[in-house]
Length: 358
Image 1 (cartoon, rainbow, N blue to C red):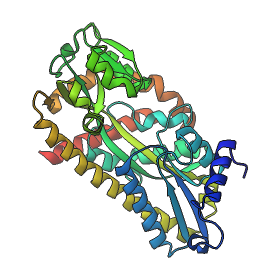
Image 2: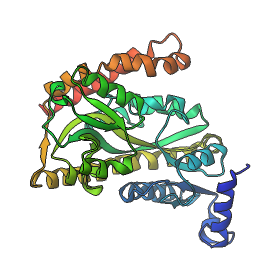
Image 3: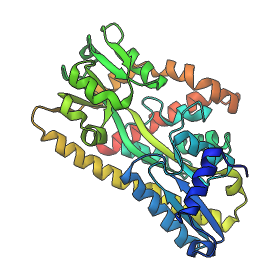
Image 4: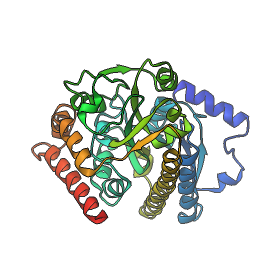
């Protein structure tokens, strides 16, 4: 298949440098030799990807050999997407932006998933509601999903006051991104409070908070620590209104040509890798929380279910679904009232998890 110019150049350069497996190498003994492009710097996630690679080799008895290229070595996110889509790369890990994957907004609509327990159910490879819907979304662009890697939930941090209710958003200036569903939810939560939303690049958050350009932003436990957001905030609320989830997907034409036994082996490796990824990220999150709760001058605000439900209701998430999700869902599942069914299933998962915790 024809490669994108940049991908062609990169792969050629790697071959010359001896980084990619060349004919006669140990990897060349495998029946299938696949590339796996990781476009970000995420050491913890890389452990899950390598776990998948090792398990795939084990379960296929060496018939499938996968080489992982981390930190954007084979290109950035969009270049990786197009490389996997056209088959010049085999596997990639993605954030499903709607300009690339039209159904991708369903991956992280506000309030679909708020905890690791909910994510385990909703993204379960054995027909979890969000797993299945994302498989259809990726099929539409020529890919097959293998597994998901989550980093956890987004909360709201700020320098002014503890945030528990919509009233606490009064006159706050918050940084947001172009993630439309999240912006809509926050707009609705702060309606009538004088809250102001402004867009800034993620890389500018620390400086913007330290200089008072903004009062707060949405962030995550790993970002609070690893990117030092806690140093320039005073309060962080575990709103958990958006779930950070990346999708590992491969070229569908390559997948479709595999024998049934190889598909079963790769799928088994993928399922185990997803559980492993959840375990290591969840443990890391607990470590982050313990560190932050001991940090002088920094307050972690833990919401009750009732407080979180009140903010969910204020966000008017049903209207957001109608605006952003219903058109795609109706196009792909005509007459099935899929939007209402998905929201009900997600509500049932939330209720089940809460009941189990009591």
